Image (cartoon, rainbow, N blue to C red; front, side, top):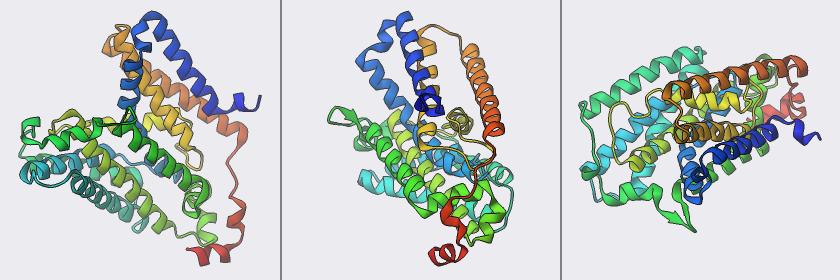
Length: 332
């Protein structure tokens, strides 16, 4: 019974119910190919929601994530077009490095200079998006300019499953391990719950925030390459506005904007829920306006539920391992 009361369990059951209802209206939605496409379509949103979860847990927000993705993706496409002999692995490493660097800029401004995350990432969002236009000259990089291996990689299959799904699965495992078993992950929850107390017990807040935003940026860089390669085109408005979809997935998954509350499972299920809606509604011939309206209603409902849950349970206390300041200073 306790399991049924958990937010993640209820959200998972709601996703299954939604898929079943759409399947009754349009049986083709339940086909193996349709479910495979749904899973593949959800991967980028899942990956970005995972690292956005860590940012939100610290009472922060990363509005630059989609612009980071666009800039990393465009630079990957330009690199592949200019040097077609480069291996896909090197291009992926370049995308990861670009994304990490852009994320670390956010982390340094927020952690070291103590600037508000929403202001910093709103500014870098505009800067990064502008750089996409500057570097590309406003021109597209189309599929005939990209090497075949560059384009094929995300949708190649291993054991019948696309690489995109395998990469997303690896990202889920890594973020779950960080959140559950590492001091770094536990420190993020402590910062989000009680930042003053976290500083008192010796948690290096500036360093934690630096690498949290760096991690978010690195994931955006990886997704930038995957996005461009999958759709075989790079243009100035790649993923325009996608940062709000990522944040919505986190909110629906029960990650509290107030910080300190959130799980990897919640981020994944929130992303899956939005992916099901986005894939299902066109099949049942719902207009784009109602798709946006329904998504907005779902987000508002999730916010209300989160607020009521926080009032009932109160803020979480610091984990027991934080009660000894000297241990944390040695670990830091």
